[in-house]
Each structure stands twice: as C-alpha cells, then as structure tokens.
Image (cartoon, rainbow, N blue to C red; front, side, top):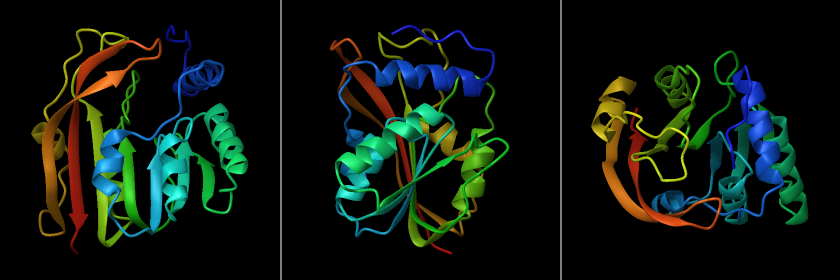
Length: 210
C-alpha cells in the first residue's frame, strides 16, 4: 500500500483509511494493549487515533465504554459499521478530532495512544499532557510508539526517540503520575502484504495518582 499524496493531514489520513477499508488486512487488537489492559476492570476508555477500530471493538467486547477518536471520517464510519455488526454500538461513541485544534472532552479510566505518530508536524507531547489531565485518579495513560522501522514502513531511516526520551518530553508532574512501564519490547509483526518481521514497541504506561 502506497502512502497517499495529500497536502493536509486530514486529506492524508482520509485517503489512507479509504485504502485500508478496501484492503484485506485483518482487523485486530494491538497486542501490547491486550497485554497491558487485559486484567483491568472495565471503565471509560479513550482510544486516540482509533483507525479502523480494532482496539475500540476489543474494549467494547470486554465491557468498556469507549470513545473512539480519529481525524478521518472514513475510519470512524468503519468503526461504527463494525460496532453495529457486532451489536456493540451502545458501548462505542465515535468523535472526529484532529487533536491539534480540537480535543475530546471527558473523564477517563484509560487513555490509549497507540502509534499516535504522524508524518506531519504534530504537537503530540502537548496533546498527551492535556488529555492526561482528563484521566481519573487511579486511571492509566498508555502510550505505545513504533520503536523501530518495519520493512514495509514509509519512514525508512527515521530517527526514533527512546521510551525514556518520550517520557521526559511529556514533562508530567511526578507527584501526580506513577510510572508503571517505560521500556522497549520486541515482537513479530505482520505487514499489510502478509510479510512478517521483528519490530520494537516503545511502551510507556503511567497511573494517575493525584
């Protein structure tokens, strides 16, 4: 799958998700999310950059109330279609936000930011700090980044920060957050053409304490 030729982030992601919706790529939960969150009691979850909805559907199937956020209407339409097919529409609400000029509003037991990375200029640290303020006491902020460049990725040669560098860049108040995990994890991933490769996930999990 080729990267779309688009002038703005909204156009880029809209075109990309139209491509993905037409592809046979399997919809599935991100494995780090399942490992980190599987034992938590269900609550209110915010799924940032929800894409086609693999994580959102996984949450809903386990009793969470999910707000699924993306910049692309094509992605949100796909989430709503899948939720209706699986009779989970009462547990999933979709909202369109670009996260630069508009953010979701609420109180969350979990904010999940899986691969919330962009080829465009993007104030990610500010966004995550602001949304972290919406996390309930005892709730979790879970950030999972690409810690390596897969063979099928577009950004070959990209410089990737370490988990520690990303955590430091968030500038969160240590009196209000407990670091549960800050590490790089290696796994075998499957690309859009069915090819496999070892990739690294940078995993940062924090619990709101105050």
